[in-house]
Length: 172
Image 1 (tube, helix red, strand yellow):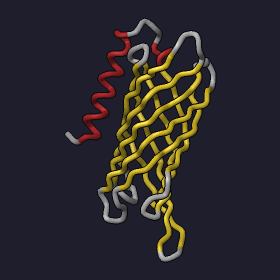
Image 2 (image 1 turned 90 degrees about the vertical axis):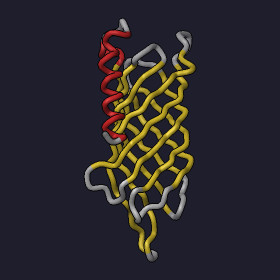
Image 3 (image 1 turned 180 degrees about the vertical axis):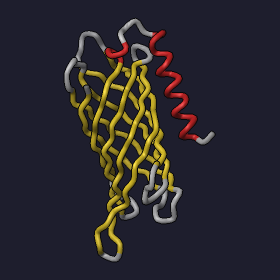
């Protein structure tokens, strides 16, 4: 079983255990996020992505995520601007280390692993570690992530690279 299938199996197993671990209803533990991110230019490439996350609280401060992401890596080839395009799917875990009942602000750490799917221009595996901030509301909330991204290429066209990465999004 490859890494992507193992990760999906682990995330789905943890999500199925949620119903027995927490007294809240499932819909109270379910959160959606949509975000756009970018990183610092490296190897003459500037990365951009658009992602959608489904987060499920499995304990009061701990959650798992299922993530899909559309990537664009902008670069110049013989002075012509172009890009690599791709889709990735994976999962992650998060821990909210500051989640106080007296405050609406939440600070946490998140990790995720994504593998390229479908017919990506460049096959790759993405590893992320982020600090995250959002506010607790019943409605939409801004989400900011700042962290480190490492991309391991499985294609000749793209070299491995790592950089500081930031995303801005909304959470419901």
